[in-house]
Image (cartoon, rainbow over all chains, first blue to last red; front, side):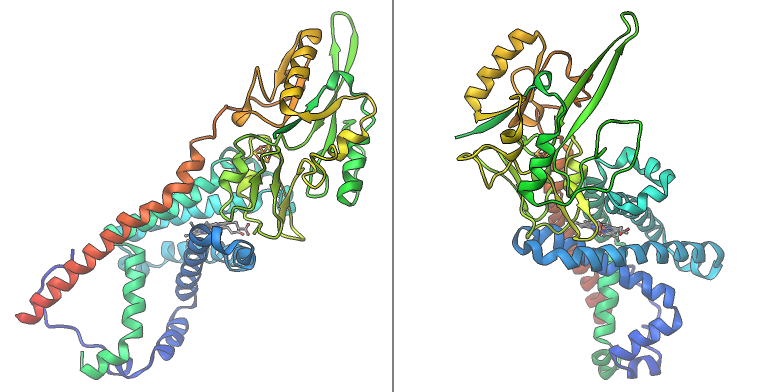
Length: 188
Length: 252
Ligand code: HEM
Ligand code: SF4
């Protein structure tokens, strides 16, 4: 719940308020490529995952490339970016100071989604035979992986909107960025 | 009308005629195989191999006798297929004649059916990005028997109306003194359209113990999307509260 405060309302720094959405997004990538890639990929995985689960019975085979490229290949990239992101959080005190308790719970959800995602992707995949240790470690969850992956996604969405966590934060950020010009014109 | 296939391993001579005719009917390429300690060849089912004969050699230490068991293995074509329940794009259909068929044009290669199948039947192919398995020759039945059945020289595979097949199975069980797997004694996932009549326990043939109904994880997965309703309500409540506090702030 947002707290009421007597502090004066923040104004956007003049340069930020004057720039457009595209420049802001470009700037985000310039400030931290890792941070932006992490958020962008996570949003893509969430949207494409929901597309498969919610619209699968209507869209059928049209979702093939969404699964293969946007969720599969980009999912692999997300796993790498997530590992780098966690490593950065471990070494950077500055980053840890901005992370809230909800962010840490969000990380637990990502870890569950990543482990089950890799388990789903590895079924009958030739690459898994080259990593027998991973195959052995994933074997006990193979039968439940899709259920944990999907239920985990919805529980995360629920958690995230109630507390509020990553998803509301993401929606709010997208809203703020897309309305920056209007707000700056109003002198916010 | 529902049809079924009776599999009678006691009559099987391990000629692999069923394996070959399945390949020919479905126009599937052969597998690159290698030497192993096993006689089963290819060792596993794959995207291109829908059926194979598992060779098992049993040795009795007291009598020093050996016994071969040849088991035709492929999709069981369950009454309540776990694979179909798991599929998010409804690419798998159970037909009233018996076959459980994967529609390759709908399949998106998500592999959920691979996790769901207790018999480990559907197989993924990296090149096409799709899943395949035995389809009980849905393009032949019921006017023609499945290709594997037609090729069998010893009637170890018999195709017919399910009622007739069940009667045959019961008669054979009386002769063999064993068990029926797939129906009657043991009904995995509501019963199956391939029914085994065995001269020993199902576990002797390496057949898995599978419950009669779908595992609870599948409906949980299917209906978890309803959690979006409380999530949306929670999100809206949060936004309303936030808006309220902003209004109050502005009034001040
Ligand atoms: C209901 C929603 C979801 C569905 C239906 C779904 C479905 C899938 C499927 C079918 C795969 C296998 C992809 C392949 O083999 O090519 C997969 C893998 C994966 N998923 Fe999801 N997913 C969902 C939500 C999410 C979310 C929210 C995330 C992360 C924030 C996520 C992260 C991953 C990852 C990291 C992989 C592994 C990718 C790989 O290694 O190739 N998924 N998911
Ligand atoms: S054996 Fe597996 S693939 Fe075949 S119908 Fe049953 S659950 Fe589906």
